[in-house]
Image 1 (tube, rainbow, N blue to C red):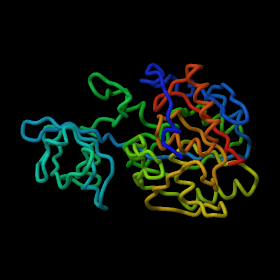
Image 2 (image 1 turned 30 degrees about the vertical axis):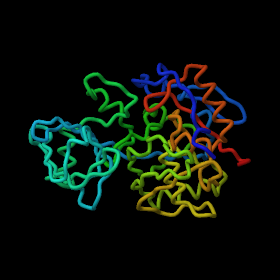
Image 3 (image 1 turned 180 degrees about the vertical axis):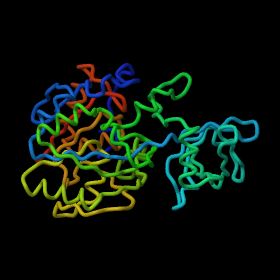
Image 4 (image 1 turned 60 degrees about the vertical axis):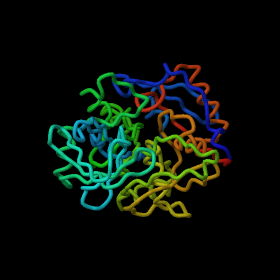
Length: 348
């Protein structure tokens, strides 16, 4: 297995810069034995009564900060808390080379400040803030910007519309620094359609980290180290998943984040247990899925862990064909783009 096996060319004009409106008007490519072009609004027709849709209810924190170290402008994107009190965060900084351990960076004209505690490879630093927990979160909500991925371009930085667009309607538990983008397609109308169809709903919480979207730079993907993320599967959700499968229903993970957490919590027998902790599961072709039958997800970056995951789920050849079809048909890619519904490859 080589990382090059998961590479593909993508025309720049297919990278979505804004979501369609309304959200459920996006296109949906169903990938099973054949490829079927649909709309996200058709999802209730594709799912069956008795199926269970599992959503990620994490809430994105506006963790992109602009500050000063003396007279040097610094852009910082927090990506993972370190320690239980919420004061210390790992972050990516630009220009990281200009910062030294012991420096103080002031954000929002003094609304927040942080000391550089550590410097790591690739421009990563560790910051200790002068606020903790709820106080720090409130400060980030006041002065932070949404941490949009680098392929979404804004001349003046994140704008107010992104504060709404880059948040799902399920967002309840603050902690993510990237959106669980599959959930961005859902509207109250679409949820009502699922309810009417007899599709049940449950939630898990996985606080998505920036490392999820980083490309794999090693020649062998098995040598790539994936970032861990904090997640929770409640006893209630675990029971719903197990009951659905026992009754012959299908579990549809809404997004790769929901899928990774469910698979983390599933035992070898396919039963899901309550879970609270760190997940660093890295799913590559050859992985045996234990508890998820369908995956609703966006179109992912080449050479990414997420494209490798969908290849593991639906088959590499099938996904290469699906992505080529999507390109030819003008589907919109990445966070603000269109969606796909993948049936699990039972032959894998």
